Length: 298
Image 1 (cartoon, rainbow, N blue to C red):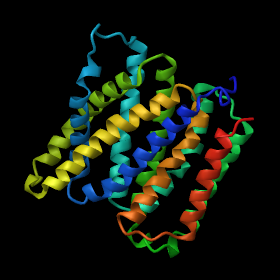
Image 2: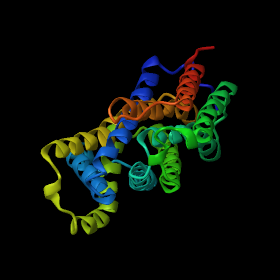
Image 3: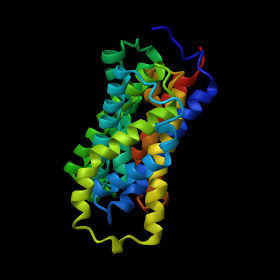
């Protein structure tokens, strides 16, 4: 595959960083919501709110113009990137700290690179491999320091396992999204359809949990946070990421997913009272250097 990094406009990199930064922020803040709202119900509310907000892009003037093979890709994109990712991510943050959850997802660049090589046959350049290795080093530092970390008491093996599952679901989302953007499907159209499919998939589970949930526990402030979470997670982050992904190969775009753990960890430290450790600092440095390697022009 031709090396397209030099040809990518700087705005594409900004879109990618901003898209994953939004994801990282809601990974951190969602820990507050899942303390009151169960996982399946929250995911159903998220997709339902987003699907309503994006109705104008679901059925635009001119009817259905998406080819059948691409519709299958859209369903797979929603299944992995919305349905399974939401289950894994929300279940994970409910069982571990926001800082640890975000930094575990530093494995995303490596997962995206492997899937890009297998599914898209993308050639991975040397600088990209170094950036991927740095992301893995960051996760390794976090793992080795886990026992002594101040917030490790809130982390459980099950929570970390769910977050690992979220990593590979998000990697599938990146690779499938690249197929869709290469096929000239607009970012807002993709976002609208995958939210609609995600809502249909999650609805039975959400209704099951809603039967036993006391909605009086949800305050006005929490409802506001849920709406903001839904728009940020299912509309804003998707549009930003897919807009940037049009101009950057998936394997290199995967390096920008390090903006997710950086932002998530910052949310945990600034808003949720989680204390940073040396391992977190190592992960931050690895993320920044990795992004610098990929965006540096030859």
